[in-house]
Image 1 (spheres, rainbow, N blue to C red):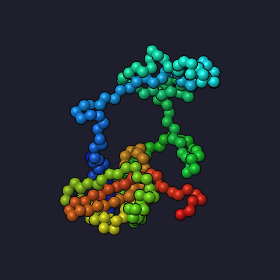
Image 2: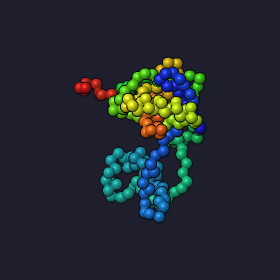
Image 3: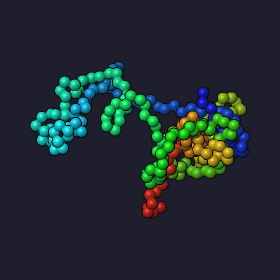
Image 4: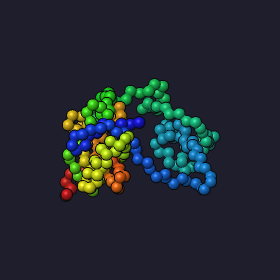
Amino acid sequence: MRQIHIANAAGRNATVTYATPPKRPTPTPGLVGREIEFRRYLVATPEGTHAALVEKLSDDYGQALIDGDPEIDMERVGRRFSPVARVFLSSTGDVMHAVPTIVEVILDPDGSERERRTPQDIAANVNGDLPVLWTGKKMSKRDAVRKFAFTRTVALSHTDGLSFDFLHAMAKELGESDEVVLVGGGKGGKQPLVLQENGSPYRAFLEGRVDGERFALLLHLSHLELKRPAGKDD
């Protein structure tokens, strides 16, 4: 059970649970009463790649494709195969028999590379000694969905009567104002939220909905802020 240590606007805190809200099932492809089976078929062999054809037929092999099918191995292409295993290839196409070293590439906002480094361990910060705090920065739901791309949403849940009242009050406050509030981890709530060890850091917004005694307290997560390109009018 996943837990989050969170405080309300008044600074009172409690540990509650969270989970991804249930989604409506997607339509099932196929005919009623008949199952769909997905199969894999071989579409090309190493001898049919561009590099192999260039080496064999030179750069201008278009006419060779018209006259025949040098890129197709008639004995193997189209065959069904299963199971499959993932392998890593080097830059020259050779199979690598050891897992490659992972390098973290840091990019500037314009897409240029800033630095390369060994990936650093990132600790989760949603269920520690310091609670997730309201930053006091609120915005309307309308503005939030226009300024940020939300990639994930989790729902906070109560575990007893006291946590129900705690969460219900937060949901009611946010629902009545029709706003979301930015929440953060660490001292002063200045850090982005990391839900699990070595997970992605997210900017998090809390949204509340209330219908009588029923409530939903949703934590919307984003790591992409939408900005107008430079030189464009507001």
